[in-house]
Length: 94
Picture 1: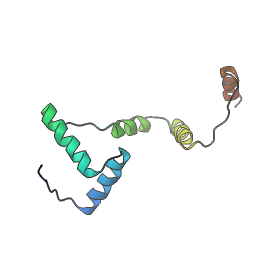
Picture 2 (picture 1 turned 90 degrees about the vertical axis):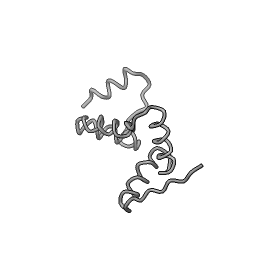
Picture 3 (picture 1 turned 60 degrees about the vertical axis):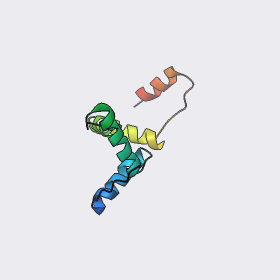
Picture 4 (picture 1 turned 45 degrees about the horizontal axis):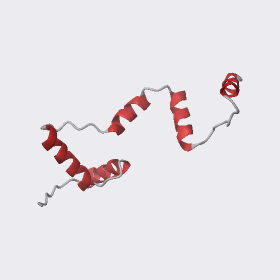
């Protein structure tokens, strides 16, 4: 096994730490995945799902974005309802 050393500035390292932590890995693991992907596919194009999710989120209306945030944080929620009909009736009350 060989060792590869890469120099990056402090800000890039902090940004990379945050990004890869979102996927549950460190920079070394991410680099191994990138290298293995490049060798297997003979290309360096590796899309990470987080960016696609962020792009989709950005296209939502502000009201929908807030509803998604509320749902993820489990705040401003109503229910549970006894039936779908009761849930729809509650939505139509406003």
